Amino acid sequence: MHDEAVALGAIALTGVIALAALIPAALRIAIVPAVVLELLFGVMIGPQGLGILAPSITLDLIAELGLAILFLFAGLEVNPRDVRGEPSRLALRGWMASLAIAGVLAFGGQALGLFPAAAFVAIALTTTAIGALMPILKDRGMLAPPYGPYVLAAGTAGEAFPLVMLSLILAWAAGFGAQSLVLIAFALIAILVIGLAGRIRSLRLPPVLRDTMTSSGQFPIRLAVFLAVSFALFGESLGLDLVMGAFVAGVVLRALMPESLHHDLMVRLSSLGYGFLIPIFFVTSGMKLDIAAMSDAPLGFALVPVFVVMMLLVRGVPVLWLYRHALPIRQQIALALHSSTQLPLVVAITALAVSQGAMPDWCSASLVVAAVITVMLFPALASLVARREFSTPF
Image (cartoon, rainbow, N blue to C red):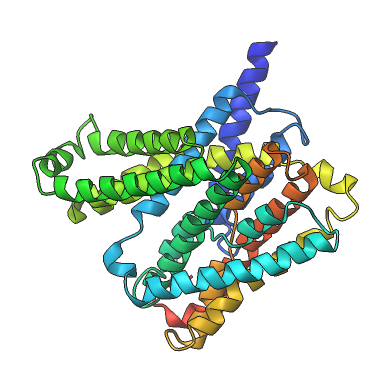
């Protein structure tokens, strides 16, 4: 009986992963990205749905690896030559403005008794799902200049800086002094390793990377996974979040790899990541999403549209103000919508807040459902607004 349940669970898991990729590809008018379908299918086959599959140690381990690979991609996509200068300056200023707006809205909402854990809510509102957006932006030809560097820089800020703030909040809860020193030490080590990777790039290792890229050994792919796991676990061992370490690993790998190999590496890693590991992270997250808790709370479902609007205000308003001289109006609106698209970090931040006892399950579920709506709605709206600005048909 146990073996039959395991087999049924494996079939259900692999089946929904395949369907999540097939449906958007087959129905070209569909605006629902695969990541949203993966979450919804996770709810469907999970304990709150059909009960076919439940979270387990094995699934959680694969899901954590998928999360690490997702943020490894985000770090890999950051090309300092593309985003430095004005894109980086505007991204930093935009995120700081987002933090200020998020603080006002989150602590105001907590004061009104709408939701608890204002600090965690504020950080979640300042995130951007650049990792989830990347395949959408690539498919729609939106990564080329001038728009590409701005959206990459804004997305990077929306992933890196919330992680720093999250670490600071956890440090404050743990006594601040020691943990803040750990955060500074991690940042210094990351900078040192990135610089070292740049120097190694000129040694004999790049030919090895090139020669083994197409061999059965696949050394560059194994190196990428090793770096993602090592940095993620190193960050976790220091009390930081897993995704921060994985993001740094991506930046390190970018500095290490010759530019001529970057495309081949991304193609092969995408097969492993988007084909298997990352979908399992989102399906597992859907299985853990406590939708039932939302119905038990008076404001559980009512807060979902409120959070969606807050996400748009927090990340979108600064873009419309700061980028008014940098981009045409249609691209400004598209960037505001892309910057307001959230999900992976919202899932990670709310899960951490729940585990810390700072946020109830219903609030976490409301935030995640709101983030799902942003992924379903905002990129599609951005494409409609800016479709005439790009040569690639949507």
